[in-house]
Length: 267
Ligand code: ADP
Ligand code: MG
Image 1 (cartoon, rainbow, N blue to C red):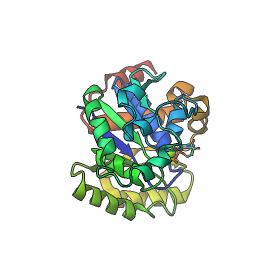
Image 2: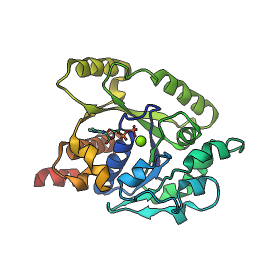
Image 3: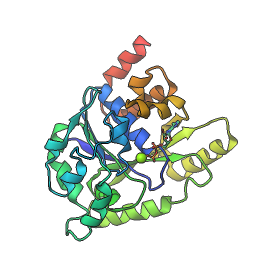
């Protein structure tokens, strides 16, 4: 049964979508069967993996509102083993349209449950808000990765996120845990980054991933080519970092990773 991993932080621009696309792709390239679900109305994960904006295409919106089944909406991607459940602009409307439904926070859970048997992992890219879409992701997820930038205000908003998690645990989803906190867009030349990292390590302890994602121009360029960084520039630092994160994730979860060994041997 594939677990469900949410990539959340209500702040925008912290690297959620970059992490969702590239962690999902690296895990898929390591041989796991992955489903990437784009829960953000901005649909950046959808375009970033190669599907230009198309308002006619069915999306997770139609599945959440009951107008399509997930299977009708799934798209195979250019990455072997990686399937996409695309997002779309009209997802904004779901926040309002589902507001009065009794199961409004559990729609995504119900949609994904029957798919879990077919994937090793389902990765959710969440919007930059603690809205109904994020609430649906938190109710569906087994665990979360929280991407953060090493900046002075990094911890601002975290107490709000943590209290939301506690409420979701109490009312919908007792399984929910934090898999890890991930430092993104890291620039180790600055003292500030190092200080903030120390603070975050004291706060999150072993839950802070050892892997740090550096600021890397290839990571920023790849989405405009509709590719994960591993296909756009396999030799970049960004590719290396997300393969390292995939390996750390697999190790923590006791998933064998023979492809990483082979890749190391070939390098
Ligand atoms: P979020 O989904 O949290 O809003 P994104 O993943 O979209 O954040 O990242 C915000 C912006 O920063 C995007 O333009 C993205 O390409 C860029 N970006 C993300 N991670 C990196 C990185 N490690 N190095 C350079 N640019 C990055
Ligand atoms: Mg995003």
